[in-house]
Every structure is written in C-alpha cells, then in structure tokens.
Image (tube, rainbow, N blue to C red; front, side, top):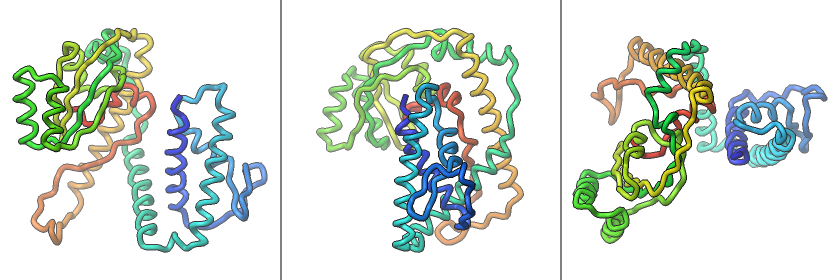
Length: 305
C-alpha cells in the first residue's frame, strides 16, 4: 500500500480546503473532537475526510491509518497556529495561494456537479471495451522499462530519430545527448500495462525487447526501451468492475467538458494587455476527480503519448 504518501498529499489538500473557510470557529461537540492542540482542535470529521479520499487501505490497517492521519493533522494544526501567529496568512503570497485554492475547490465542485452521477454501462459495452483493449486485459503484461526523457525540440527529436533509424541503442543515443550537454532524466522502472498511456501501450506491447521507441508530447520527448516483460492477463470477470468505473467517469468527464464549452459559448470574453487580439480557445476544463478504479484503467506514463 502506498497510503503514507497519499495521506500526506491529502493532508495538504485538507489544509487548502480549510483555508477556504470564513475563519469562524464553531464549538465542536465533544464526540467530534479527536485531539485538542493548544487552543485549537482536530475533529473526527477531518480524519474521516482524509480517509475517505485515501484509496486502498486494507481493513486490518484502518486503525493505524486513522492514527497516522490524526498525528498528521496535529502537525498541520501546530503549523497553522504558528503561521497565523506570525500573520503569514496576511502576506501577499499566502493570500494569493489561499484565493487560488478557493477558486480551484469551487471550480472542481462545479465540474463534478456538471458531470453528474453517470449511467451504469451495459454488460455488452463493458465486454466490448475488454475485447477492444487486449493489451490491458487478455494480453496484459508487466513491463520492465528504461525511460530517457529530454526536451522535445524539433532539432533534438530529429537527431534522435535519425540515430534510432540507423540502429543506435538507447545507451548510444543517451551518450550522444550527454555529449551535447542535453539535460536528460529517467531510469528503469517496472510498470503494469494499466500504468502506461493507452496511446503508448500498443507500441510497447509489440516492441521487441531492447528496441528503443521514441515518444513525443507537448515539447517533451522520451526514449522508452522494453527490457523485459511478464505475461499477467486479467480475465473479464475481474476487469469488469474497473471498466465499469472507468466508463462512468468517462461519461462524467465528457459532460463536464461539454458544460464548460457551453459556458464559454455564452460568456463575453475580452482579452487584454499582452493577450489582446487573441481568439477564444477550446475550454481547458479539468474533469471531475478520477476514482481509484479509473486511475487503474488509464493512469498513464508521464510524458508518453
């Protein structure tokens, strides 16, 4: 379980959401108080909020997770108290971050509402998705990959393409990039099929071991080499619940995007300053927060498209 990192992330989110309030301090019922910290309190509701957004906590670890969350919230409360005492909440930078957090929460709440509840897909639709994505399910594999990431400028990408076309290995291409002082990052990682972008998976599934593949996406590039694979197929029965959740969340995402398109169509948008003369672009709407099941289906490898 990767709960500690997730819990830490959610504690930061909880702090941002708490900061979006009006600052009032209503008296909590004694049964709602989990800990008193100087003049402040940590409530059971705060603990439950974090736990509800922490995926895959085994039943036998819930109690220890609750304790871990409580201790994290106590640390958070202590830090908040010191920040307020130092009047950090009144500094321009912090005020700007608080306002950005408030706007983010409100915008996400609207998009989640616009996405609606989603309609359960028919069994035939689930089966079709299963059959259409054999690399994710029937022919699912776990991959040992080497990734070399670098800036995807046209010049660099062209040079790398030429080297790969001449049969250069990833090690040779990496050496050439470093010789030209190109900043590179990456390493070797083990990833299951569902952790790889749906755009990249078909190429990697059919790639020969040791054969470098070049991927480009929005100014980034990566050389990915399949070092080894291990077949681990997933049958339709096991995959059905994941596919159902993914398809429902896909519906929500599409509805939220459509709602944002309609808002833009109705809105009067005037660009000013350096942006004067710009034409309205397509909406960059964030979809409703994906569920853990959706992440399992299409988590994706960063930078691989």
